[in-house]
Image (cartoon, rainbow, N blue to C red; front, side, top):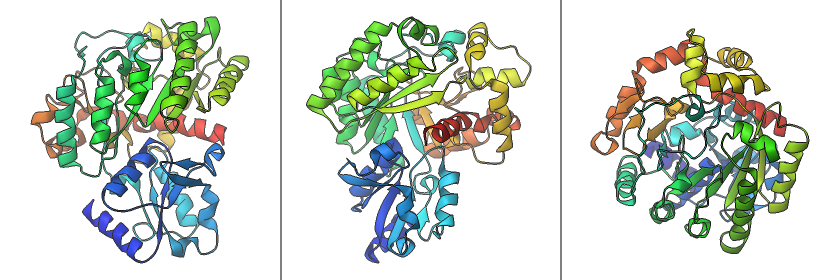
Length: 416
């Protein structure tokens, strides 16, 4: 990391403007970290046309086309800050004349590790495409992370990875169930780390306290409207969801209008058409970012088992029948780019009980735990254990390490 900070400092001294490619959570986190190191970027680059001309974190957002304008290569240094699309963005930059580690730097080089801190070990829904709906394991912790424990986690992250500017506070659990969540977000921000939260918004949390703590990004998940809502957001209530969305929208406008709100609409066979249009209109009304994404089986435990000849669990089998892009089609596309790196291998997932998962995309802790206690294990040891994991070998053998990214790319192409 030090060599890249020196590179950035040198480019600034040469009079080049620093642009961050990606205005999402990763991009905002990079901006936060740059500012802490005395570097002020000139703006964001993002594909989303709804963001062009707007200001985020006090910086203007430009379209990618500005990088192909005459003189851009000579006057600009670009930091790629996107998670699934680093390879594609690198190709675009190089087509414009930018040179890696000369006029642009990749996110994975500047910031080789991202962190997920799972603050809730439970969820209030049992979505059939998620392992919580597919099966139960009594081996996974149902603990909530305390504020005191979170403080110790942040201290260690800051010591071992001082360039970290953002963390994700969710993976398999519903973070709003943790009563300490506002204090957790507030503490992270006080330590120059921005937080992203994802919620199904089916729990009546103290949303005022949460937004007052100023999370940088709230991601809301939904997969249908009315009576269809509970089919795949299993156990959820549409009316409760709508009420909480309206509450969030009002409090955001009152307290923290700059908070990024993304509504991820999971597209199934039963939820496209009018239902998708209804949710898109809701986003337009409340100025939320609308992200329609093709649903997929998110539990890689099930996907790996399927590739190795184990039948899908009943819930996952029901979900498969509703998918717009079947698991076989997704796997075929993933295998086509199996030579590329695994994005998830860059993410260190710290569970609420302080165990560390080998891979954030696998649910069952059996054969997926590389450290029993994050606070007692060096990041170097964690990295070594993950890199030599037999789970990684099995996953890569089937190209599953590219599976989640494939669906993300499909959704991006459909949006733009």
